[in-house]
Length: 314
Image 1 (cartoon, rainbow, N blue to C red):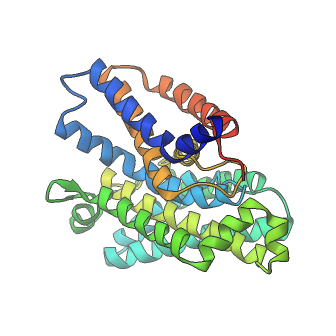
Image 2: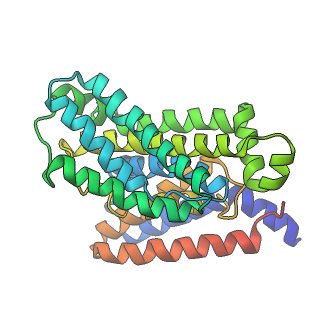
């Protein structure tokens, strides 16, 4: 019976939590929370957390972590904004300043992890500060305004009734689902997280896959930086501060095992939505924002505990 419950929890636990929280918030605020406009706003607010969580998912999947995603988000958004203000076409600025630079910064994390042999926690704790410092230096600690209207409307606008940031997050999630479910790379990453020594004996290049994982995390953070910059209409040097906690929470709450080798992209998406529901609901209930940090921390602890308690043993 317990084993059967473990399987059910592993498959549907996150979805059940999302539904339960949505119903609770709806009961606490029936006039506002369950309206179409507010639920759409929840999706919009969750898009950046989902993007960051999707990148974080891969690093946690190999029993690592990336604490620098919030700083990468800020730095890529700032570089892209600087390029646009300097006259570069906004599409090219997105590709270079967001996607390429994001992948490059993630690659630096992967290179340092491989070269030093230190745990990713130590490396990314250091690059968190380095990347944030670079953001403050190149911006002179000032926001960058004057971004093209076409950029803001194309990235942060609406496609019919759906916010474009939600569509972007969905496209990235679908791409990552394909990678994890349909490619040899995805299978190798799961194998590496499940047992790195066995993966090595199977012929999997551990250092190469570690590098790829951090590049993916950097690219996802870079895309999140572009989305956030477009939503704000400016590049803020302190953008993304503390967002690494929410990215980790989205992945862990979504069922990604902190011990590696287990998790699904759809779970991360639901984890990001859970964070969005909580944040939005607490705001509607006029709960001070700093209480949300307590809730996020408690959820991370609870999610890891439940993973140990109910997770299906490999």
